[in-house]
Image (tube, rainbow, N blue to C red):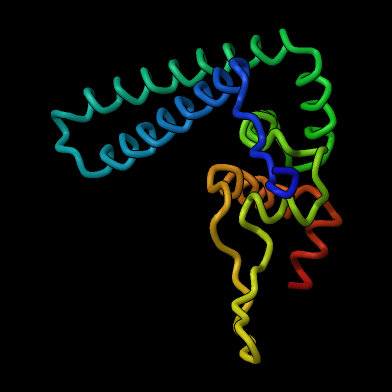
Length: 168
């Protein structure tokens, strides 16, 4: 069976725990977004209920972020990697943590393979003599959307990315 590719091992316990915390944070952010939306349309008598829910969600997000901080501080390897990632303007703590939890191949594979894993590498639609369009698709949507938001921030604060963004 030497010719078969071995499947990479699954996430270890710490990676699963970190992923779980990040998933929960995203869920809370979505609920907060929904409640803020409701605030614009809710009848005045119900406004207090929605506002209390918004405050509760904000508190829970803060609590979870403290838990994430503690978790990262307890793991020296991840803490060092997080510091490297956050040294780039536009890459915050949540982006770095998401990359560490959801893209453990980072630093182990070359940039083209990482881009393909995330769904950022253009894939061809060629067949025989037919040359199709190059499309980006598939990949790890959580990582892709996190990188998108990070890139938006970087276009404001990172001069190199800002210049490239202006060219595009």
